[in-house]
Image (cartoon, rainbow over all chains, first blue to last red; front, side, top):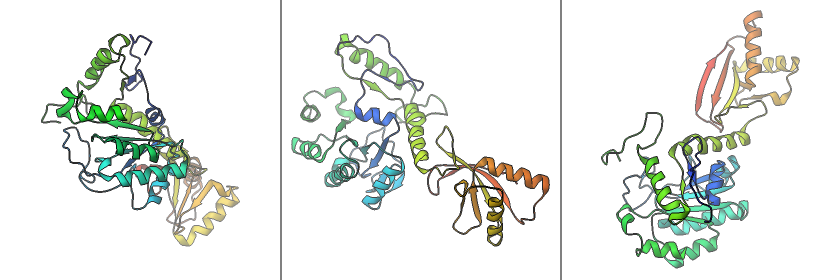
Length: 164
Length: 161
């Protein structure tokens, strides 16, 4: 970073940044489909916003559409003329094979420029990261648990982040 | 979150009080070039609700809208709906054709008792029926605003005839 940031430029919603990933840029256009791959998660983050219809249930949603087959996902993506997908949950990496299948499905259907990012509160090991990256995942976002916020350096999260 | 003392800034948003200030502190201490230059993005809940979701709805509306649907700035669609007994549907369609309404300007529902068209045309019809009366029995005209997908939630409906 060479430029000095002295002024925070806000948009009308009070948001600002000094850097936006491709995933964020796509989302800001409203062009990201939200793919909820499972409601199961073993953490109990105090800020978890999931509804009763999703929390700790092994259900899949593409935006607000309940997913019963891969075709449902593609249909939802087409209906919003999606340019990318954000994979979330629950903890997506508890269903690694499902996540990889969906990444391949979307990339096969919409091309490699269909931008896919994934949220996780796990600290995936190098082999998992490699599998995800080989399947075509473009971006990963780590949500380490609150207990670790003060001691991130040296934790497994730091290691995972570095590898990613 | 309530147990931990988080409160909303108002009743119209999902914004937790103090969150924007904490983000700003993090931006200044970590994001500025002279203090580490970390890459920082603060995406407010208001952005998610008001901008991102609205834009997604707009994209969906552009994909879904029929030629006569009007897309609102909220991403919902606005159109007119004529409800008529199935037995008079063909006569009404003939009436629309006689008035030079092209085929793409309306859509006939599966059971034929629902004909949907542009809000403006529905208003015009309602005005004509109001003024001249009509021999279409039990005809009702509505202006509908709904989310842009099959069976989308109806945000508003107003009966105009």
